[in-house]
Amino acid sequence: MRIRSRLLTTVTGAVLVAPVITLVGQGAPASAAPSSLERVERVYQSSSPITSVVSSVVRHRVPLAKSVGPHPAQCDWVSYLRFRAADGPEKSADADRILVAQPGILEGAGAFESIAKNTIVKAAKQGKHIEFWALDRRSNCLEDHTGLEAGNAKKSFDVAADYYFKGKPLGGKKFTGFTNNIDNVTKYPWLKNVGVKQTLEDQYAIMKADIPDQQGRKQKVLCGGHSLGGFITGYFSEWDFDGNRATTDDAGFNQCAGYFALDTAVTSDMTIVTDALNLPSGVRSMVQMPAIPRELGQALDLMYGLYDTVLPVLALPTLINPETMNLLALAALAANTDPHGANRVLEALPRNLNIVSTLRILLSKDYGTAITGQPDILRIRATNEATLGAIMDDNSMPFGILQASIGMVAPGGPVQAKSFPFPDAVAAAFPMSHAIWGDNKKFAPSRLDGRTLYRWSDYDEISPTDTRTSPWQEITAIGELARNMSEPPLDFTEWYFPTALMTGLTNRSSPDGFRHRLYPGAALGSPIVTFQAGGGIGVDAPDGHGRLVKLPGYNHLDVLTAAAKQNNGKPERVSENLAAMAVDPRSMS
Image 1: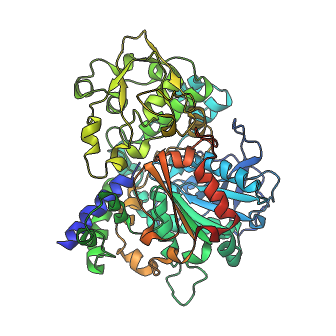
Image 2: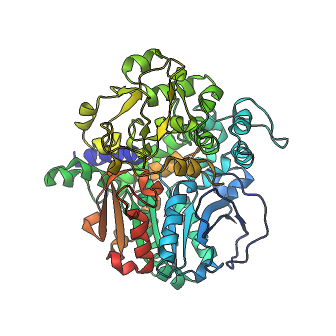
Image 3: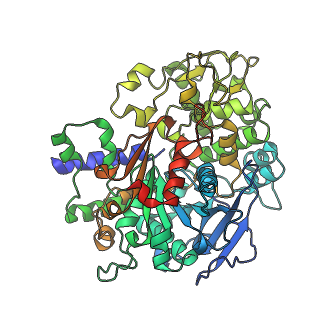
């Protein structure tokens, strides 16, 4: 019975935590760090007002083993976004501190752009030159960003939309389409072998290459992540890369001076998400077992292997798949390049089942609209900024892991309370309601007549008398979110999430786990800071260790995207505390 409870909550935890890449053009190999790996670094430009931070994309050639199976040549490279102080050292090993971050599920390196830059700026004010590395998963080598890159270069949504939706070639290249549930089985069978072990080895390879000295890594690197990335970091801290306890220079905990958890926890135990259920201690002990027996872990590994073979990429028939992940980036591109233009995204979208059903799920006011499509949500007239806001804002987006607090529909655009998928009062009664639905009231546009123009009020434009939301509940500037979701060469949303990573994380007793996860709870021996969003997944610091920073008003994505100055006139607290930790990790003990 206890094992059964463990399995159920493990799967539940995986789902709840669940809610990028162009291949970089060749440049001169950077001499910033000696390495035995082939390395390419390219600085990229951003429209961010922060000019004191240099942004670059770094690629290392880390070939996959032959046992992984046939795969595209570009997938022998791993990448990350490197952010550093413009007046700081060019060589990473000479920086005062380096923060290394793992992304969450369906998330890429670009999601960290705001938190990275804000943290570097705040550390610089304290006299420290730090770096922030946002890691990108290897599987994102499969993405085609040709349209997004061209759209950004020409500041034109139409250029990108024509490439993805109308078959218009760019530079002689034509988009070959998105994967679906049928062809991802035959196209990407090798991804079943890109799970926890490979993900951890990729991070270790990057860290060793760009900071070659192990003692330097142990003294200077802070390891962490957002959402699922916190659990990946937990595994990293407990991992022994050669599987030999007698040699600990390669142990994960000996690569990091401390840890940070962005609306997550640094632990390998994903059942910690059940903390939000406030279960009695006796029930909690049944749910949160230290580990399942090895024999059961081996059986689970075989079962999960079959699942990973059938569905190597997380691609559902609607809502979550490569096409919809790219849709988010395109909506952001339109909002970034032409925020006040009307209906550019909605007019360009193909009217296929995937797109139409996804928009119904995200924007419908009630079950009638969601099921019948009447009134037609695509008849809404909205600015590009309002379109992005309606998709991503916590007052509209129904799923907590995809929410940011970016303002509200501007006065003059009539809205009504949503009853789909649940009325607010019903949703609030669910266990772990904040983790699933977020913590704010949900609204939908109520006048879909093709004439009424919906506009957007930014996070700092909300009136204190607004009954739909409050200034303290709005955290992120919509323009900044639009920029982060569309500009970085390694993007915010992830098209090809390997299911083997998720299934592997939920089975700590797998054969790889028994061979390499030799130091359970190792992160607890170092400073840790845990950031808990008020409308996030509700995870506490493991065993109460380190500093817990509670963030009222924040949603799951806000911990990454929050504006540097908040509506209370004070600095944003995540970057403030990360900068403090970068200056002195012991301050978080």
